[in-house]
Image (cartoon, rainbow, N blue to C red):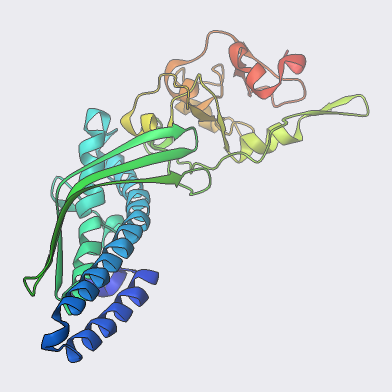
Amino acid sequence: MNSRLKKGVVFSLFVITAISLVMLSYQIKTEFKEEIKAETFVNRAELINQFIDNFEKDLSRTLKLSTKSSFESAYNYMKSTGYLGSNFDLRMKELILFGTILGTPQATSEDKTIYSWLEGINLIANQLNINISLDEISIYLTQKDAWTINITMTTNVSISDNLGQLKWNYTLIKNTMLDISNEGLPDPVYYIESVGTMENLIKKTNYSTFWYNLSGSINVDYLTNHVTNQFYHNNSNAPSFIMRYKGDLSSNEYGIESFVNIVSGSAVCTNSVTGDCSVCTTDYQFFSEGCSSPKQIENMEPRFKIDNSDTENYNLDDIEI
């Protein structure tokens, strides 16, 4: 096994199952006799079918892990090249399959790719006298909702029995989901729009209420914590997670947004589209397009501003100034 496989291919339950199948295969071969060839053939077909079932289940797990690491690799690549733009699908497919961008290996994707996984699977399969290959692979990433990426992989699967007895050829469509709400994936908008001076990891907010009335006084501690931690909240006026990697900051029904942390100091305002603190604090507006009607919030740091059209999304209508 080469050094790459030693580092990172994790097969989980698949390995245990496959080893059991190797032992079963050995038993079948040692007990093989002329008068029970037909029964042995059936047993071997069932053995390989069980192998295929576990192969497909483990592919779902690997596809999810590879996609996560590919977003991390894409982010590191974009630090020097900018947004992926219209090349998003091509770049992500290459990362998920090979761990490369334009043929150049990306460190965070090493040994977490579909083909490195397949190489390791074949090491086990060969002990069963089986060979597995995948070709004509397509991979598409779409938003299922604000916090979930739908991963669809379509491929032609060829599984051959090296004994020349059995062969499978079929088209496999595999769908799995990646929950981005707490994976800590990086948001390229912060780094690219601030020219490398700011970064932020995407974490879904813990708050559904952002202020409350405390003995007749407006308390905005929840909003302040949400802002200082730069948590994300879904908003159909904001760009989606995938759109952020493309550099498309227009609105989307699965949009997510954070507030730039201006509570801790005014220095970050030099990164705003206006170069000062007059702009709305919502990330895509702060960095790119500004806002038409900025509103301050009672008892919040005066530098914090939110567009009038978004106060309802945070239930701040009653305490806007």
